[in-house]
Length: 421
Image 1 (cartoon, rainbow, N blue to C red):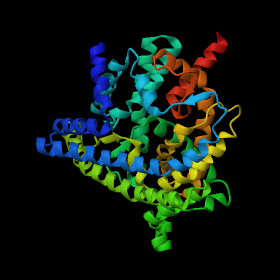
Image 2: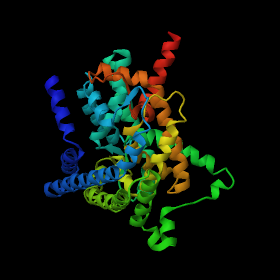
Image 3: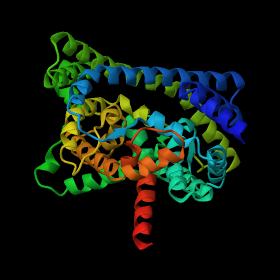
């Protein structure tokens, strides 16, 4: 079992850009694509994703000076906020991890075959969204079975949320045949902001404000171009954080480059995903019925190419810092979270149909909730990390304890049971 666990860990640790070509090529062959076409589709998806990672990292590194500026405000906190990489690594050390991955894949294939869901989740890299709640449940109950069941429930639930958001995801981002299967965002951020937009629709005045980046681009000409918007967003952030002129220009060009490069990289991925999606649908039509379509479940990063997402990310960094001081008894400074803000934006922007004003309202709410719950569930986060043998000195927390619905449910249920017991 330990050898099998190390094999799976090693395979997943290679990263999505290495993992995806294998998965896509194998699926392509399974769905009847010629071997050459399937391999090419896999390579294009892997290359596109590698480029996407580089572009997102460029965005993050470009705004790093602003994060470092705010880091100076982070003294006096007694809890360490860890990034998702360390959290994901910890979740893999649980006894059931090696079993739950193939189990989720097999159940997913069965549900697709039975036409219970149309979503085929190939985003194995982000199975940590299921493993982390499972690891938390295991750490709090010492039950391998309970941890396994929680991870399975999360892995199955995301298929139905992914199917719910598939049509708006495809229409808004232009990602035909795909959907998003990142649990934190499709089962938490989108439903909350969807409801928030319904409330905003009832508020006079606010419901008339429509700052749409696409419409803005048509009206403003060159000043509405994504590259120019990126320059303005980077410059704004640089001035706000009192950067040097050289640093401001570097930030401006970095954000502008990300605005242009991210959608280009996504388009390369789609060159590989589109033929796979077509082959999958042809296969399902032949084997199951004409109404049996498939949506390929992918990473949230595919939605980052929208100009509203990147603009929202730049504006939300200082707002997130402000929110830190509004959380009662705040015990951590969200340095890692600042680098993860961008991943929250696509679902929030999608729920508001690209309206920047509504997106910023939604992002402010979501980031406050994330900070509040990540602070509230520090004991649970610390317990999980201690059981998984990834040791830190003192207490810890992470973004997943603030925005992963699986973690939130497990933590709330645990506290209720503690009160009852």
